[in-house]
Amino acid sequence: MADTLTITDNRTGKQYEIAIKDGAIRATDLKQIRAGEDDTGLITYDPAFMSTAACRSRITFIDGDNGILEYRGYPIEQLAERSTYLETAYLLLFGELPTDAQLKDWTRQIVLHTMLHENIKKLMEGFQYDAHPMGVFLSTVGAFSTFYTDAKKIFDESARKKQIYRLIAKVPTIAAYAYRHSIGRPYVYPDNDLSFTGNFLNMLFRMTELKYQVNPVLERALEILFILHADHEQNCSTSAMRGIGSSHVDPYSAMAGAAAALYGPLHGGANEAVLRMLNEIGSVQNIPGFIKRVKAGEGRLMGFGHRVYKSYDPRAKIIKRTADQVFEVTGRNPLLDIALELERIALEDEYFVTRKLYPNVDFYSGLIYQAMGFPVTMFPVLFAIPRTSGWIAQWEEMLLDPEQKIARPRQLYVGATRRDYVPLEQRS
Ligand code: CMC
Image 1 (cartoon, rainbow, N blue to C red):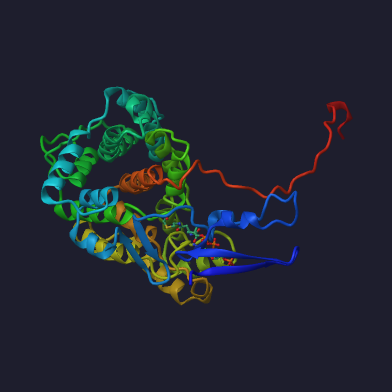
Image 2 (image 1 turned 30 degrees about the horizontal axis):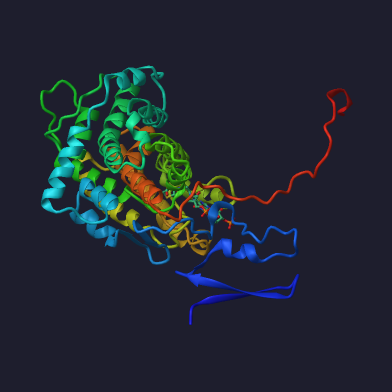
């Protein structure tokens, strides 16, 4: 017998059988439940989508209670240990790990698209010297839609593929230019002999040397961080990507909106906020006072808590291990002691324990980025580079899903009832 939910409407005494599939009921099945002839039918109320699935997806699986994260079925721990970012991006986008020939072709396509149009450079030069790199990043991604007009052909598979290559390949270049712009240094062109992350480090940090020497430990650490950040199913920015994309706008415009969502301190801006918080705390002795203020509702412990994870974020565990390897090269980040003590106290404190608040991906990532020489303002941009693969994979899945339509939530109107216009002179 199929699983069903029986609902009795005590307004009318009628009973309804609602089908349950994959652990969910269809909200539109509730429409048949009406109090009377004029009633348009029952709808669900779910601010912040706490309990509403808006799509079927085959990309990323999360079991928040048990701290499990998988891309296309592969555990994040295995990918972080054995894969590269480009291979993981391929997996997210095309559903399977590439064969040797597919990986070579994919890598070649990415390498071919790393350069930016010189006019993009001019556009970026127009930003103020102290412009936040994430603001520069999202504006530049949006501007791409004016450069690649074939991006409008979203239902043409080959045109779509072209935009995928462009986006994956160009985001590190935009990010590096945004960084160089903020410190007043000339932009460095991509070096396509290097790996994806090696070239990124080159574009960020190369000075007058003819060939940038990539530190293999930092290159690998960045690969791991990129793999961990590549996708995270229906988070705020991905939902923005899907929502904007559902209007059938080009992917650059949709991604500018996704990047804007990521910019916020509750999402991708959290790693920046963690560093600011650790600096503000200043020393281990000040931690108890800080925790007290958080518990009193005066601010949050940034890098803690998650909508989905109600246990230790598996990405945070991997990042903590990676931090040790990075600090062996760069020297220990002095803020690490504060972070470790903060975590120790929080994990024992009743406030955090009862609310199931654990460190998330952002708690330790900023410490690594800072040790590698990035300013805090670059942290959200470092999140956006790998998340690009997740955004596009989710966008394409949404476009090709016959069940999807333009995203258009309902509302419960609780405002004033109909009233007549009052002329200005009669208003008190
Ligand atoms: N510090 C202190 N209290 C917290 C925190 C925190 N970081 N996070 C949640 N709480 C409390 C919150 O005040 C509430 O308490 P009460 O029930 O007494 O009102 C309870 O825990 C539940 O919180 P919520 O706000 O309903 O949870 P949410 O699912 O809406 O929020 C979150 C999730 C990630 C926005 C939130 O935990 C938060 O603000 N964390 C800090 C920012 C952060 O680290 N963001 C990065 C998220 S991971 C990377 C990403 O996806 O971008």
